Length: 182
Image (tube, rainbow, N blue to C red):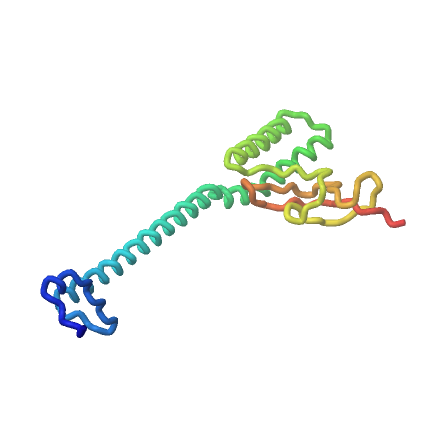
């Protein structure tokens, strides 16, 4: 039986032939719609990317402002450290001289007030005496051989160190123990 062309009713029921990939749409309206959709998708992608970039920049800016605020007292504190050192030297000299006068007590009070003010801003004095030497926190001036302490222990603090929050503001200058030669 020869193949007969489909009747109009059968032609209506047949699935549409897939368009060839290389075949261009013949309807200009269809082409414009596809171009508009493609352009819309590109713009939507650019919008999403711009939103993500803006959010990242906003978060980075917020973190930087927080860091700046957190460490804003650093320059002032660094300038006050020599003053604290001098007050400690004055207190030590008064103590060695047996001076317990109101002036010596006043120097001690001022020293304590400055340390308290710095502490309110996250600046604290390091406790280093008899602690293990840490090159991130301490600057070793010299080593002394001794049996009293294990090697690497801080024996003497020449200049106290200070921290600002979790960062070293000034390392402590220390003398450390070493094993005796023998």
